[in-house]
Amino acid sequence: MSRFTAAKPLIAVSLACGLLAACSGEPSEADMKTAVEQTFGGMNEQLGGVGKLIGKDLSTKVKGFKKLACAEAKGNPGFACDFEMTLDGPLGAKTEKASGRFVKGDKGWAVFEK
Image (tube, rainbow, N blue to C red; front, side, top):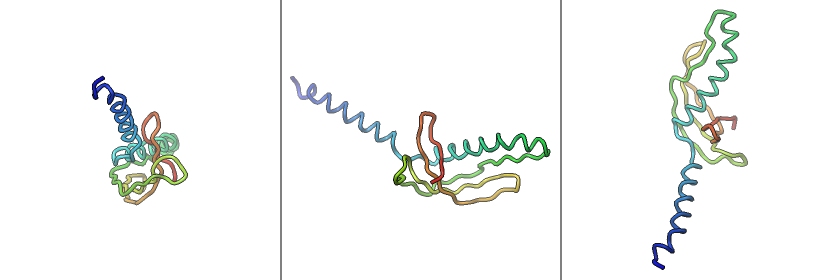
């Protein structure tokens, strides 16, 4: 038996571990922005009916986003992340810093309260 044949299982296990590690890494800035936009999308849907009643757009849009830092969440799945976002809503645009816990699921990343 050649050395390569004996090494095949080791190579397969190493590749599988590497792929799993890559999948379990922290979210990218784009992942985080998408998760935050989806959260605001749900809120905008709920406010849409009220906005139609009063004749005003009550939606909030994420105009800018910057990832500041992430670390594994302690005692919970996912990553505790800090970020800065610029929101454009009914009261105008404002930039604020925020934090959230980002968890990867079947449909991508979702954001929750820390």
